[in-house]
Image 1 (tube, rainbow, N blue to C red):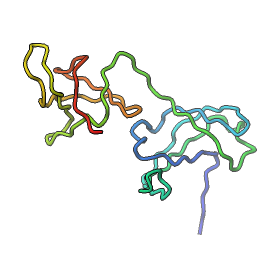
Image 2: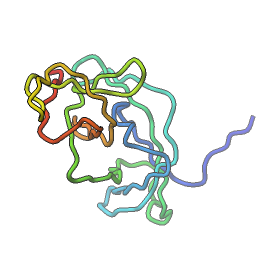
Image 3: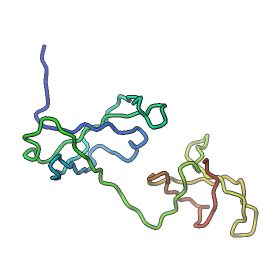
Image 4: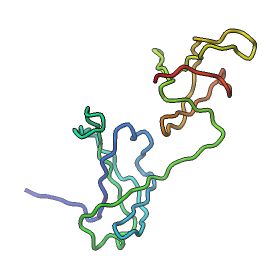
Length: 162
């Protein structure tokens, strides 16, 4: 029987499955070591086995998946066999976008998403309440989602779940 192990050190991070949409293989990260120094790295692999954490805040359990990060500077971690570290994932920032709560998105049977306009008047003075408007989604962050579309304009009010 033969056992093979990697010659490079890596960091394994249990990530909530809800956060996986923002993490991609090859994405740059910063690993903060126990002594406070930082080392660059990148996401090497994203696991495929989902594990339920029985200690979720709501008591229902949180599902997590392992993300493996490789450290670029082997010298920075040569004396560490195992230690708690922090990993910062490089993100993207956008300004001037239209965003709605994620709970405002409605999945369409034919694919894609829409938002339902709340009661009110359209720019032309017609009742706009209850009308579904197709949207294209962009970045998701902190419970909000970037939306755009032909019939989407700043100031529109949309219905969302609580």
